[in-house]
Image (cartoon, rainbow, N blue to C red; front, side, top):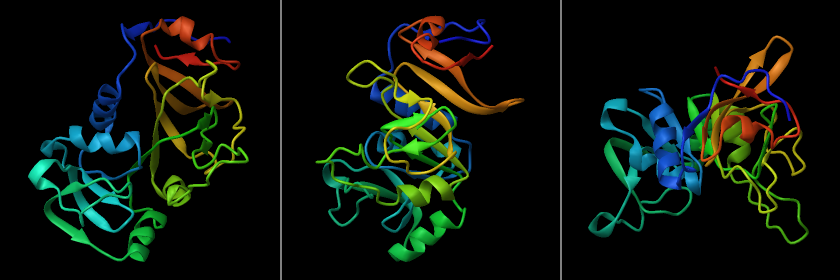
Length: 228
């Protein structure tokens, strides 16, 4: 709708693929972090973390020290992540009871969790477990625990719904998973930060892909700041 800064411009000529998006998220995770990757798109992030980052991956079904997705002879049917995808283990990996895994999540021991979403509000509210449709199957899993327990919540999702409207909204219309928990949103058309400003929280477009930044923010029905 309106912008408060117009110095930034388009960063990439094409929207980001899922692989490019996962690579970008992986690069933004601070070295030494303890991280949980949600099911769906976020699982791809593990394939782009480097040994130099020394990131330790946690999966809520009871594993610490998870490696990238397993392929071919590396597949062990008993070694899976929360999305039931075969994964590898890194040296020093450990296994534990489901309840202990949730205690790690709820106890604030995770630095970052990366989740998918149906909607994110401009104030950082997360909706990712149900569309509220009569035939929708609720699938909250451990998302509520992760959203509130992790020190930072990154969201990965496509920016636009099938009808062309942004999935970053002023207020979530879908059932909310967590309030004010999201700090960054990574999408195919842009990376957004939810930051504290003098008059409250603001949505900041850090970089745009496949569309000019000024054109992109015009598609929202609330103000979006373009990073300078």
